[in-house]
Length: 619
Image 1 (cartoon, rainbow, N blue to C red):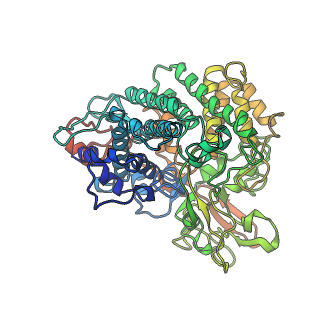
Image 2 (image 1 turned 180 degrees about the vertical axis):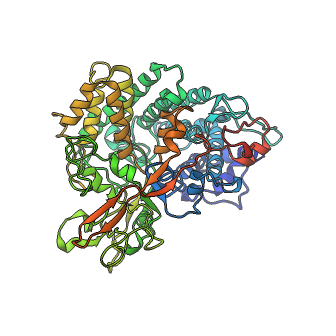
Image 3 (image 1 turned 90 degrees about the vertical axis):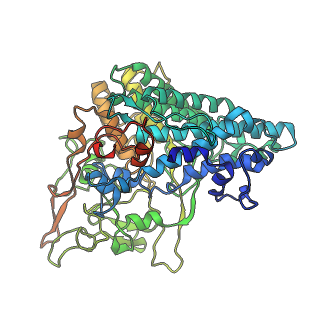
């Protein structure tokens, strides 16, 4: 059975999949599970392999877990009609095309290595260096990382594969595996309940926190000599604050309507408590460390692997242009693989913070992209939008101008849908993540590092605001230390990805007028604002599908997800003005279920493994 093979893979064979140098050399792979404990480099390699799996295919948002996962929602449209994720959204995906099967395999391989390290405390009791104090630093970190990595992959399994069982109708998670199976063991595991899986993840997070430093920062390691084995050298690995943040994310999902039919407010409280711990760490520890440390109003940096925005982060791809190739249109030597939807564009408010359907917003449907929220201009390329080198708006720095009109005096613009197969289907292209200093026509092409935030500051603000609002409303500051409104104020005050000023005045200070108005209107109005802020802040980071799922129930899922997704059709008039038709349907969603399928081959091979509802032909 596939899951059995994963769990029985020898440590040496698992390590052979790693590309990191510290796992070498291999005497032709002739290590077995018993022998590896004689080689501290191989023991550390168990953990290194797991980090390789965290980083696999997700270093720069180009995988099916990230931009493509958002592009099957109302936020975007995939250009290729044969791409597996678009087939998934249109309910034409076959069992042999399942894009999620590889994640099931990846997660269990990594969990197997964590279990091997943790079993009988062998990993913890391995001697790594001669110095007793340094050895203790190493063994504590590795023990904590084993728990942290297991929690991360368990959460990934729960997020992707948790759902209502076909046979029992019960809310199920994944088969919890905390042991290492032997060659003669019969492995036929049922899925644990959703609640049991949540409890397991929280336990592993708490165990990780006991062993890990609160953060991998040099200023938190007072003895300089210890920084060989602790501190900033381990930036990018899981630490205590990342596990606290993960707990907040897990609790928020568990508290949401889909998974909290009893409306247990304590779950929201746990989400808020943990999210605030992460927020407070950034504000009171990371912010005061040095001039280059975290600042709450500084912009997110998509090409800086050392960005203090990060709470958990992948390794980076250096000198990479995959994301730019993916998102730019054919006219600028890109592939236009994803287009932002009109629905997402309309979700961005105006510069006064008001939504476009607010009578006081100042929105003009004849000039729909003028006067918008500054964040809009750092996320979306639209008709006539310029591309300036390094976002410096001078004529000398103009590299490209988008031409998205479908018809006009001289025919369609070069970037209009249908004009090229490398243009998006919506007449919007995605600017988020793109390094604005790259131009393939330059004599020396400037490619920058790219990586992926696993958890970041803004996600904690959104998690806290949503959860705290459910417990005490938007204005209460006494229970957690800040109010839900203040968290959103931090969000709206940040500079944009292009380094433009945000909506709210600098924090602390007076929030923008619309934020005050909505918070004063009460918890329901504020919840709607938080959901929209979450949408525009985390767009194309792979969370929208799961947000829509957790916010809905079986009663309203179909109405929320299975509906047309729009672009815009643009006519260039004789006076070179434009007319916008917003009724154009770029794609139609037909999801068979709110749940991703359990991999078909696993269901065939394990009789106790129950398929998720909505996939009758996958049993």
